[in-house]
Length: 332
Image (cartoon, rainbow, N blue to C red):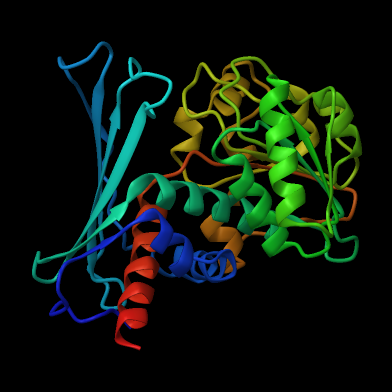
């Protein structure tokens, strides 16, 4: 039930977000909320404004709102991109403002970078849990990329798929992959975490392959995907970016998070242009999977592919859960 709008305005920082959005709760919330509210949430296209204050700087605004009694919120995500920042200062910052959609009253401000990392990883893990083989539970997860999102993807998949016992890590910069391996080993002593020399080695050995890179050239070769593998593509968000080749898409059964993926994801845009993939070949969206209105995995050997680009729909659902859990904690 939504919190009453009479609560004082609150700021929920990154530390608090991690406390009020544990992956089991967030994944379950998205699984229930996406099919229930996706049709009621309004998400206009994001707008971008160039800023003269710094070279190539930009401000991006992403609004969303819902009038459903169980989701009476309006959210505005603001993202700043300052590529010229020094290496010690992140180039991207974000904040999410949450309002009552019934009265317009401001309710909360949430640290946007942590919220984005948490909800992005939760979306991937939810898709993997819905598409993994129930009769042949996955044991090995391969991670491509060792950036800020990588540890979140590991944590979310381990939460959603407790059968995972091994993680393979690949990154172009070895120092970053080594640091991620050390971090995951410390957090999960019962899981075998290994650094691999090449992505081919990881893909050949993994049941689930999760990619979060900015690559413009395929790093996953479809011919190497094992029968029954699940491929999770997170990194690309423009038509110029691409994490897998066409064979991965042609061998796999493709699902997307939202329709925006067909316009923004380089893997899909390029495959359609080359005649490898048609829109009707895409089996369904995450909301349809969660609702059970489309069939997920059809056999143990089927390869599944999930491509996400993220939208304000999941920002709103994640912000709702964070705010309501935060208020409940304060009132306890």
